[in-house]
Length: 122
Length: 343
Image (cartoon, rainbow over all chains, first blue to last red; front, side):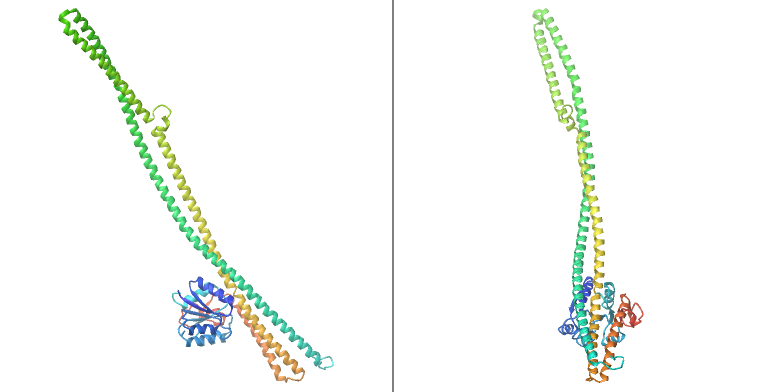
């Protein structure tokens, strides 16, 4: 079973997206912000995919991508899932090493289609 | 703030600004409450929906189990039905065999009974022989001493004739007894006639086979009915599961609302601070350069509003784009307009 690290400071988002991924046959680990996620990655967590919010306390999503690329998740796909739609932020995420940009709200079918696109065998 | 004469009423203006700051504080607090309440509500709704989702998963598993049981039930009914058909054929065959055997035995009884005529003939011969013996005895008496030996023979012949007649009667009685017993065993005549006949037996066995067949058919029909119900249930549950997924996705509105309101709260905080700067300026404790920050707060609020509007435009999530990435793009990119973009 492929594992997804889901990062969001909103409990409702975590619950919603986790449910979608679980129903899609994926294992899900959650973190409440970028810092918690980074700590877990540094602690040895090796997910097959990361889905991260952008605006979060302590460590935002784009900074997380930048740090995670240095901390061991060099080739792991990282998707940003956010309410943000500013092109400058998209560009910043791309520069930091993000794999894609998803805008909330997102339906299960669309989310799982993207996940299967970036994680073969998911 | 100036009166018609163009005189600034600093005292009233600063008082009004102070009240405005208080009002902004209240509004900020209220918006914070809205965030908390909607988050709590959304969380509750999602927990409920997840519970329903879990229940539908259980129902789907149950439906699958039910399908399996129904299939087994139908298989069993089909087996019983086939066995019932086989049993019916076997019973028909056995009934035929018994019927043929009964007919053969009845024919045999008839043939044995026909022996009565032969016994009658033996009796007639014995009577004639007895008469001859009597005549021989008379003739022997007439012959006197010379006929004495012949008289003894005549007596023996008459005795043999009596014994023959007696044996014939014994045989007749034996035949009557044996044929009577055979007929009794076959159920011919008397009260047990219906119960013992092959026809009655056949009727009973066929009735039993028919009842068995009917029961198997009922079982098969019930199985098909249950199978239909299980299929309907599975369809309903699948539909319900799809709906719960949609509801879970819709609950993401809370996060969008939260971020929007948090942006507004931040802007209101900034606005409140800048109203304080304006008040300080009116009181002469802040220069005009400090007022520039007020414009920034308005810009921030405006950007927050525009961002929210853009998200509404992006509401129809599901379009995928790729900006020339290695991840098999489906749609060419026009970056800001798409809800899903792979780099």
